[in-house]
Amino acid sequence: MRLETLICDNYKNLNDNDKHIWSFILNNKMKCESMSIHELASSCNVSHTTILRFAQKLGLNGYSELKFYLKLDNQNNKAPVFDKIEYSKVFDDMNKTINVLIERDFTDVFTLLDKCSRIYAYGSGEIQNNAVKELKRTLLSVGKLVNVLEGKEELNTISNYMKEDDIIFLYSLSGENKLVNDFAKELKTKGLKVISISRSGNNTLSKISDISIQFYTHEAARLDNDLKIIIGSQFFLINEFLLLKYIEHKYSKNK
Image (cartoon, rainbow, N blue to C red; front, side, top):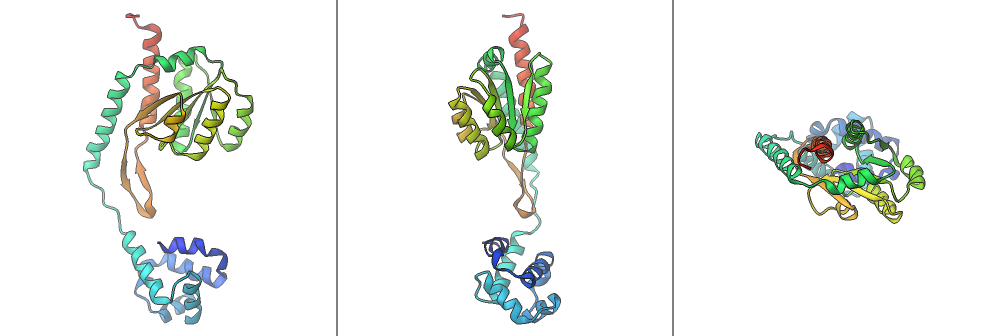
């Protein structure tokens, strides 16, 4: 367990002095690791007993255990190492995704596009939201208007007006976003057709959806504070293939 977790779990028990101590520790983690209780108290302009009470409020036995957790945090927060093999792995993800898209028959998607009354789209994150906006631009070139939904409030409002002859594209990286999945389930009860775009795997959204379009990606890096870097440009790649495949569907000389 990290110190940040202990702080969050016990935040309501902390007074202003405690919060001041935590602010100093948070901004000087490496320095505090080697400080005695008296040195830390002096740096925070409090008594050493105040430092001790701060540790006890976090559920720790004393200052020694506080320093132990601080040392663990510092070890976990060492600068991340990037392996250049990730370039090849990202290329492989892209290549496998492209091959899947080339081979996939999109007739099921285009049948819905041609028969539906209205098209909606929603993305669960910033990249996904940008991707659905790009989907709107992409499909507009072939005469298909996509209504982009943004935010929980709009989902709740617009769902009251959706009909069973409408369709929706849902973009979710993991396929495990609760808001998206609950929304998809609600729309299914109304008879709407759900088309999902997510990473490959047996995720919840893919199982809820009528049509699942998946792509390959992976965690390419992990930065400070456990920030995961997962390449999401495949969302835009799928948009482009939807356009090209639809043009083929409508205008191919081999039809």
